[in-house]
Length: 109
Image (cartoon, rainbow, N blue to C red; front, top):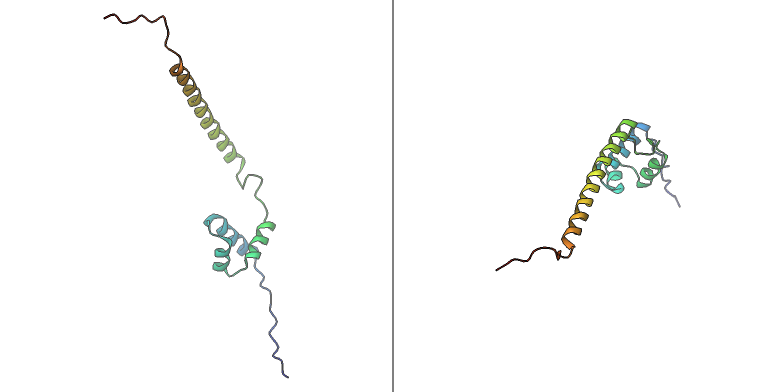
């Protein structure tokens, strides 16, 4: 009984640049992990593992302080507009729902 000896599988070692490019493609393309893994010839398990080990770009997804400040200012302006619109609608609804005043003179015919 001669058993054919299967060649030993060797692990693929990917450099950090390759991992970064694959992760960037995955996060920006909107494709699923399976699609990206097939495109680059890696395992989906590798993608999830690399994502877990990747250095995070900060608590806000890589935005720097200036970008965060600009986003906060934009959101504050948007909130102020929404609050003003809400207040106007409240007032107009209150005016429209008031019963007619009795002091209004009746029309004479």
